[in-house]
Image 1 (cartoon, helix red, strand yellow):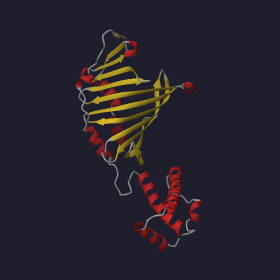
Image 2: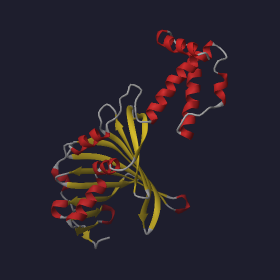
Image 3: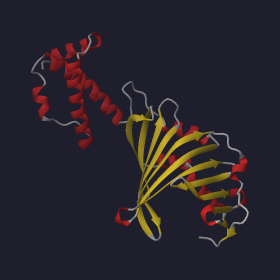
Image 4: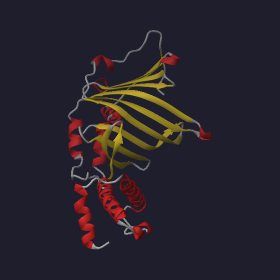
Length: 282
């Protein structure tokens, strides 16, 4: 393609309707560009470029694909085509100013012979009150955990067994346990290290931007933020969990976030039903 031909095509694109065939060709070419980026993280020559100048339709399609590729590269670098991008420091500041958060956690853990443990928890975190975790398996509540830092107390209630355990924690232990359930701490740790942009995509109808970071040697964590609100709407953790003396592969998804939610303080008061028996620490 002559240099002036490409210039004319690019200039004309803003003033003409792009035919359906052109759009199809452009999408195909942009798809090839996406594949190249995914494999090599940089554009490299490929055979399809040799056929770009067969006719005027292909020329226009190539120009459209160039625009699409620009978008792909920009998103890959965490920058939208119009130059806007999530400021992750602002995201962290916003969620740290929210004294409460409610979210759901979906856990999948692999066992031998293709078996899996799957559960879902409702988690409540409040800076002034602590943390509560209600865990269900197959739709049945099987465990409630209370962490009350002000009392240095940790209580676990097991409704199916009509038992509960309790223990006393040091200030450091209580802070550590609370941080394990607080996504604000997770993001703070991720931004303090090297992290990789994941670009933009769509989740539950919202445009999101993501980053990926490593937690220790065993876990990869990804954060997805609604670009319109700057609130995280999904966190994924892939790695291993120590269970019964074994490291087991796991996948955790946190979503359905309610940032700065109003939570009744009584929710954090340990509720031990009558007739439940105290067991030793587990």
